[in-house]
Length: 419
Image (tube, rainbow, N blue to C red; front, top):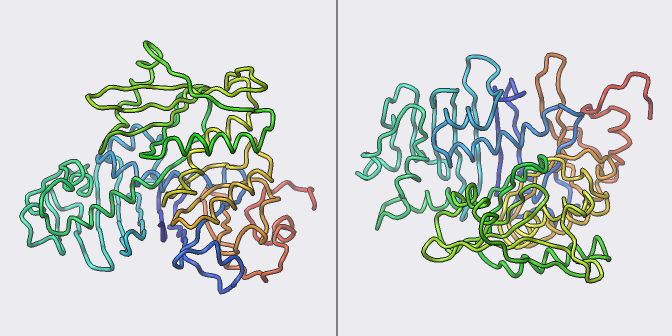
């Protein structure tokens, strides 16, 4: 589970901002929304262009950087506007996995890694600074193992990524291997749902229980639209299958068989990776009174539910950490509330972090006060982030009324407009 995250000098965050999923309120309300002292969810409110999305992008940047390995390539291919000046961007990511608390520190710019540190239960695993050309400055608990001492890297490569690329998990009887098992497993649990446009593709990976997911999706669609009598996944072959595999084949990694849920345009597919690098694919259709519908014919809300379905299935059935920007767009508030309650009430150690605009969801009937966050941009374009908890509202306070009156900030300034 995510414990905390901080970012500085990245996107619209000039000064350091801190975001935490630790329980900070003493309120006994909504005990089901806390798991082992950590919150099951959090929401971020704020005006347009206030920095809400940038928090999600910052977390995803760290995950992408570790998976990619080379920070220079990540900057060029993923983010067009990064540091605010010549200084480095700074990140601290703390998470809990397998009863251990890990803290990962990364500082970098367009060309190089300036600092990289890893701690396990406050013990130093390794440290690296900008002056280290190809080795670590402090091997910490790894110092007595030749495998780690022999790893070399370039100035733009992350040491953690180097270990991943060198298949550290495949080394027999390697000391401290369980640390990296925990870290890479946690990273695979982080999903960023990009609801950009119908062009391109959104990729999600899930490893098992494909039929359970299909049943979950069908039940979900039937609940929101009674006219949908069934869904079907029909085989695709030839050029259509090959077109999907161009981008999707790189997603099949680490273990087989594996399945991919893919959006391309307005269509949704499941790809299966079989033995001997063989692939099969199926396309989703809905049926209304026995008439087959293309997904393109469905409403924007139905299409969004389909796209979100795997994320919420994972939240309900696994220990996923799901980041969703503007969950409430194109969806009725009742549907959004149902989805949020459904995933946060699960027994899994899963978490959802989402940005919202619908103020009807800004209520203590749904959230604890330490789950509600605000993003606000200053006049010079810098974003700040803060929790509702710092205002310490009473457990029965109507926080929406105070928010609309501007008491918490993070609301559009519209001159003469009064609530």
